[in-house]
Length: 129
Image (cartoon, rainbow, N blue to C red; front, side, top):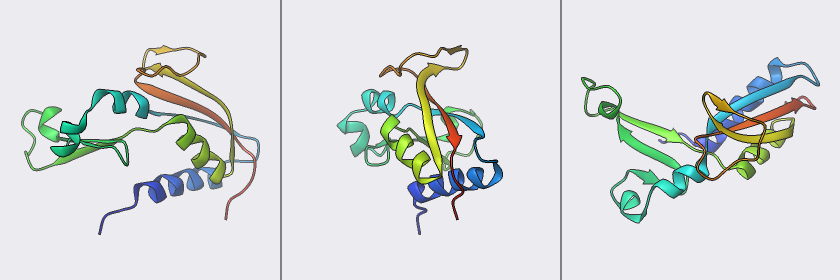
């Protein structure tokens, strides 16, 4: 049985919410789904390298670690800004800002299509049971 990635990610945010005091700020960075969508095409979908429904890149661990077992696959999920906003709100947070950037190059500027990551600055507004 496959794990529902959306439910898993929402549960993670709810667990973070449970650990924070009301009005606490929470900062998260994640992969930019827009960039991922632009990087892959229908052939990548057909060959199982990209899942457009979940915005997930699938590749063997050997692409990162030369001597790794070849049967281990890595799944990297990207997120769109609207998807993040919905998840944060459903987890008891307000979203104060969404910025784009790449490690070592963060600025408080709007998200660009080809930036590597998305940064979400949020605030806990309520407890979630």
